[in-house]
Length: 134
Image (cartoon, rainbow, N blue to C red; front, side):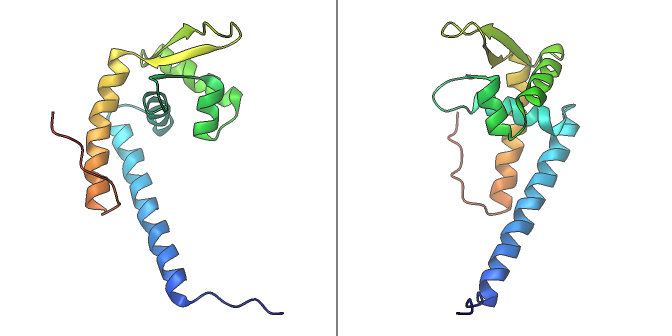
């Protein structure tokens, strides 16, 4: 039995979503570079601070979030540590791993980047609530 073709409107919606997503990623990469970070460093900082329920993460958790190998994540974490963006802390539950947390410098850069990202998300009319006023 031949498969029924999708309606043209579905392709248009998928194409528009992909276009909007690409515009956002391009914006995000450029914004990170303007702050002196690589896009990967920005992603690592966001993955750490945005980890559900806590403000630290292990290398394995971050490798999964970033969709990179464990080895690549170790290298990225080391470069971020050398730039004083993150700090390693012993994992009290497992001596074989460490917790990565943002330093004050890393948190400050992430806060600045997150503010411009929220504005861009709103400009692209992606669904996201406005952040609360401090």
